[in-house]
Length: 304
Image (cartoon, rainbow, N blue to C red; front, side):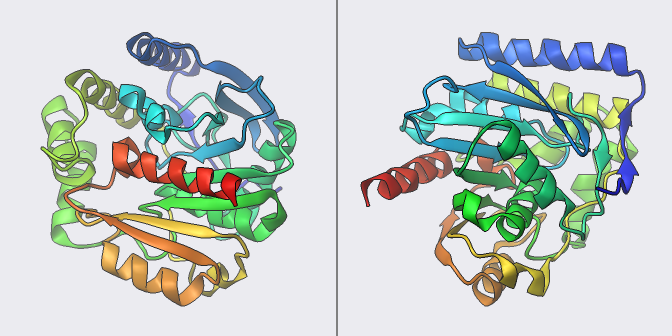
């Protein structure tokens, strides 16, 4: 696979220790330990956090995170318990994002991320799996759905970054660029309050919110981010041959929900359902009802 870009930490040894300690704080908060799985892929080392992986009788759910987030965001406040369904869960730290995986990335417009995701399934010895992705992770899911549709039982896209380009509305640009141009806890909080969460309906605990703030400050200040950003996959999406569920938040500034839904219905052949969550921001993977919906749909597959 051709490496298009390379992102990296400014001081890798020191920064990766910080990231590991941050993960341990989430483990302490949640009262559980994640299995640490290191895979070798075409993009270098790929790190995966595992839960219940030893029980092969359980269905597998593979999760891909959004840009400038960690896959562990999905389990803030024990969020994965909201699936209400016993699953083998694999939280993949996508290469090229601020995490413990290598920073190598393919061309975002190629099928490279789909090929890489297939390698991840191979390395995890998963013949088939349910997959879920938030924002950037939604694009990865669709790339996988093109490259290896036979491996995917169903794909759940949460405010995905593949049905339209990042919104250039003045409001969205202001809140997204603010913490980058002037990095401070105050500006990160403002970004989270206006773009990621939607209080009081979509609101993490104070402890989880602090974890997000700490991570954002770390990612912005310590990571040299060269990774290409999500884009409108357009007619390429017509090649996806997997059952697809679209979960949208009505307060998503980054990818406004009406256009996402319009393009999903235009391009996705096997679009099974569209759900709109009211008074929810872009960080929908931290919203309990969204995870409960995924768990219920997986259960329905097992019962059918």
